[in-house]
Structures are given as C-alpha cells and as structure tokens.
Image (cartoon, rainbow, N blue to C red; front, side, top):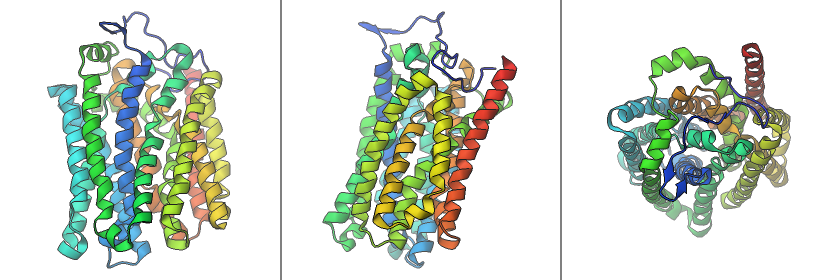
Length: 446
C-alpha cells in the first residue's frame, strides 16, 4: 500500500512513473501548467457557486425563506440546508463514478455540470416563503441537494493528474496552483454581493437583486463546462489519464483496501477545512447578528483577506517544495490552534479585532489550504487514486466544513465564542493526530 503523506522534496509522494511515456499534443508534451489551468478553471467555477449560496445563506435566505423566525433562528435553519450539499456530495461521487464506467468521462462531466447549473439557476428562480409557503423551503432543500450531488459528480481527476505529472522539485507549487480556485471564487461572489448591498435598497436586494449572482453562476458553469470538456475529452488527455490509471474504482473494494488512507487523507487537512468556513461564512453571520457594521464593508474586508489567501496559497507551494508538504500542514495546524485561542477576543474586539481575525485567518488558510490537495491525492495506489481522491475530499469537506457555520454560530449564540475556539482547536488536533499516525505507519512500512 502506498504510504500516505511523505515529507521532503525528494520523497516518494509523487514518484515519477518512468516506465510510462507521456502523452503528447501534435506540438509536444502536455505541460503541467496546462493541466493546472484546467484545474483552476474548474475549481473557480465550483467555488463561485459554493460561495454564492453560502453568502446568500447569511444575507438573504433567513429573510425570504424563514421570515416566521427571528434572524438567529432563520440563519441557523439556512445553515442546516447549507449542509445538505456536503451530505449529498459523496452520494454524487458514487453515482457519477458508475455513470463514467458505463458511458465515459465526458458524459459524466456534462451531466454533473448540467445538474449543477440547473440547481443553481433553479435557486435564482425560486418563489419565496411569502408566495408558496413551506414549499419554498422544500424546493430550496432539493436544489441544494442537487448542487451537492453535482459537485460530487464534477470530479474530473485533473488534480490527481497534475500531482502525478508535475516536475519532481515543484510538486508543492503545482498542487498549490490547483487550489487558487477557492479565493478566486470567493472574490467574485463577495464582490457581486458587496456591490449590490451598496447600490440597492434593502427591498430591491431582497426582492430581485440577490438572484443576479445565481444567474452569473449559471453562465460561468456553461463556460467552465466547455473549457473542462475541451481538456478531458482530447485524445492526449484521455491517453494520459488512462496511462496513469485514473479511472473509477469500485467503492466497496476501495473502502476495503484503502479505508485507512481515506480517513488519514481527510483528517490530515482537517484544520484547513475547519478554518475555511470560520473565516468566510461564520464571521459574516456573526457580524450581521451582533455587530453594527455594514455588510458591504465587512465583505470588502473579506475580499482583501481572500487576496491574502491567494498569495498564501502560492507561498505554500514554494515552502512545501523546500521543506515538505507534511511540514507545511503540521506547522499550519499548530498556528491555527494558536489562532483558535484568540477567537473570542478578536471577534468581540470591534471592527479592528474582527479585521485582524479575518485577515490572519485568511493568511493561515491560504498557507494550509494550498497543500490540502496533497493530503487528498498522495495516499493511494495509482488504480485507486481517482476515486480515492474524490471520496477523501468529500469526507474532508463533510467532517471539517459542512456543518462548521451551523455549529459555530449555534455555539457562539447560545454558549459564547469560547466554544468556537474549541471547535477550531479540535480541527487542528485532528490534523496533527492524522499526520502523526501517518508518520508512524510510514515508518512501520519502511
């Protein structure tokens, strides 16, 4: 069994497949940079969808889908539905892996992104609770489940392909480039909402303005679909994916033979996934409930944080190539644990304290999330990597991030911000424990 997360520049984490000739275009080899572009395009479109829904869960949905509750309870209900996508995502992965085995990669990706676009556009067209009552909530829930199933099915294997074909001394760099979709998606989504909040009246924003980002998300999905199909459907890419054995594996066999790697891979980056929503969705919801700050101003601060996150992602690649991915993940988990102790002080520290928490949190998120993909892809033997990476990512999102806004807001509202500290600390401890276990198992296997 392949060792899980190796350390150091010269590790066997991505051992070159010297016996496999690289696929070529008519004008030369497929470059890792070209694969990285495909990864960024695909992830940016998915994250934009993701953040449009997340921001609407704070700024819009409590008022138009749960007007019969106070703002806190309405936001908590919105976060319950927000979590549905993370529960549905592994189901989508399993369903669409079966579709790929039967009909091919292009059919799978087309259906998944069509479902994602349909679900996203459907939310934009939804009547509110005022018009159709509880059916509005039911339809919102179903469309959110549709988004989750589609996101599970949209896995194209390009991150794994990128990891296996990057130059030996630039593994961390190329792994980090693939993570840039997260800050790009957040910047675009938050900018749209900030603009509308500043330019529209509250009535217009809640009536029709909030729907616009969902229409934009649908349009971006269409563009991303053609861009990704252009990559994965070419003979060169198909050949390279086949040579690297990046094909669906049976879930039962995968769980039986690679269950340990799935768990370790998901937990190794748990600190990063836990922090993800605690600097994006949670502080926005907390500030809306307990602060007098204008939401467009708060979003601008978060946009600046996302720019810092992007820089941190790039820096993480350079650091990982010098010191090793495991060192980066472990060090960031320790710093996230330290940050967790200051959550109450900073979030209760007015605008200045909140800004420090957001900007520092985004910086640590960039440095840690930049290498989170390595924890997902490095664990598996070649024939299990395609499905194993997808399910490990699904599990990491579910355990680390899926319920984070709901838990964090619920704990802070009913018991105080100190409990958010414990929640974030638990993610850091989980990462450190998984990394330590991986090191012990690696030493035993060696």
